[in-house]
Amino acid sequence: MGKSKKRVLKNKRHVVVIGPPGGRKTGISQIISKLTGIPVVIIDDEIVKACKKKTLEEVTKLLKGNFSKKEGKVAIQVLKNSTCQTIFDTGGSIIYSPKAMKLFKKYGFIIYLTASMRTLLKRIAKRLDRGIDMRGYSSLKKLLNSRKPKYKKWKDWTVSTEGNKAEVAKKIVKRLTKEHIVSKPKH
Image (cartoon, rainbow, N blue to C red; front, side, top):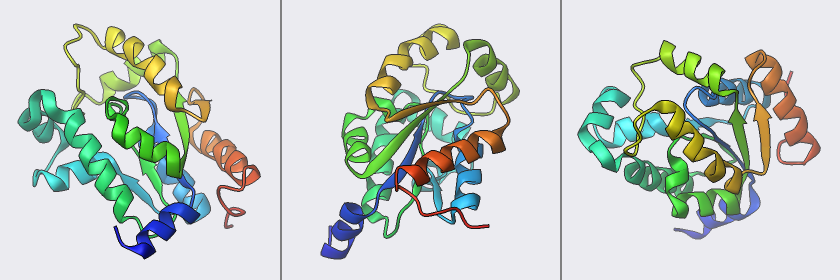
């Protein structure tokens, strides 16, 4: 990594969004980006590009049980190549990559987006095309419950996404501004 990239990583505090499938990571990350002018990188999209596929579902089938390993590698590469403050919209299984999470923790403010189990399952049911690394669990409920402690381990702040996406994003931007992680929102 060159000196200029190291300087960006050292001086810029990234915003890292983690959470389960159905946690509204992408939608809320995109709204935060619009409110702040900070670019957002959707790690799932970067994985699709890296695997030269068209959809995340194709990538999930291709990688089978190695999805989270690829997710970690891609996330690390994208973070190392960032040249400005960035919002990272991670996939739900990023927590299985300690190396990526350590870097995100070092260079970012980690926001754990969550909702009730009922809400998450309802949202996931609407998006059956998404790739979910089940890690051998027999049900989504068991998988989601197993991930909670891992998300909590890395988070700087937990935010419920039960409400309106735009309102949740505004709440996050307000906190990020207060913490001096982002500048005053653009209007």
